[in-house]
Length: 365
Image (cartoon, rainbow, N blue to C red; front, side, top):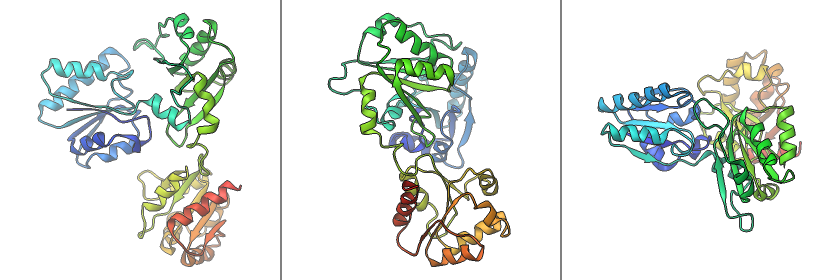
């Protein structure tokens, strides 16, 4: 039995040990907040069981514990997968204690906590010399009923250092108000991070007062709130959301020669990447709804595959609002025959150079 922290969101942030344990699993029992791509690290034969949001109430948590024990007693290798770290503001401790009481051996595989991962991707060091000697983590609700956390806000506000709050949409405004009301300076720097470490990550910075006003006017979903002088480093240390393709969606048309390399290179430049062969990807619908910023073709066969999937007579219209990028004369010629004019056309070179040309196009736009 493995209790595995899957990390803060991005599927490649799971630890090597977590990956190894998933590879051995006969059964993967996971919360729905775990990124779907993490499940691909398990074998195709492994049973996958979604147990929802990670026990919304005590009875649901009991059911999860009994499910873990049942699968283990069937002689199966079980991987219990949770987002972040299962021992930080999660029910991993309860599940481990239940397994101990049932006499079932287990191993705890730590994960990168969501707070640490999201802060690092936002360019905010949780600690820094001279920015305070304490870090306080605060849960956004006190129990499974998701009531307001019972926190000694007077003590918390007077601590100094960095305060990191896990907050649901209802708790975030209350936390901001409570910190100000109990003595935290209204002009202190703070940041709100949504969808940490994912291509959809969004970071909002300002003073406590400014953020309190912002979330009152425009409520947001589950988020991480960071309060303290360390937030001021963001403009100097931000790296993730300053990449040229951050916030852009790229559609990579499958190439038999290099099926995955192009996607990886574009991801390094910050793009959210879709591959036409991915399960559930509807190329026609994505383009029709204008959900794609750039489409890449690295061979004539990739162009022909695209034409076959969307219809040759509709190709130019579907691509009218999307930047088309071609690598090599064969891909360019095939696109031209379909009345498609590439915005980015590289006559030759490496895939890395092609990805850099795409990044340069959006960097200058």
